Length: 135
Image 1: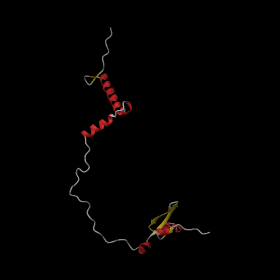
Image 2: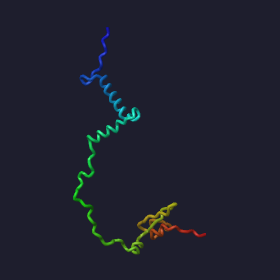
Image 3: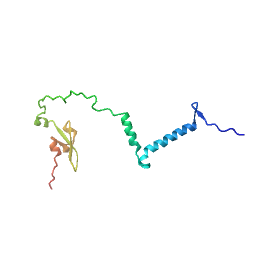
Image 4: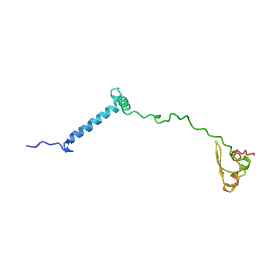
């Protein structure tokens, strides 16, 4: 006579069949929640989200805001520090780097020697101005 097959016992008392059953039950339960709209027309995920939001509410953005704050401080007006346009234009060197349908593109360089003479200009406006070719 044969002896009956005994299930393998893990962790001192939980059989592998019980563990497999728990995992399968979890998979079936998770599938029902995620596919509930398609199966029975009831969206259990909305109920789950509603319960979750009631148990763990989102913290308020304004929770730690100072109530006596009235806004940013006013900035004291300062004197204009822009240099004279004629004085600064003598130190400027602009180099034409390319042009496309949108316009011509120029970059400011430190000296006139950093750019070929045919693409070097004294001001940005001169550099970006289209030249008309006469025949």
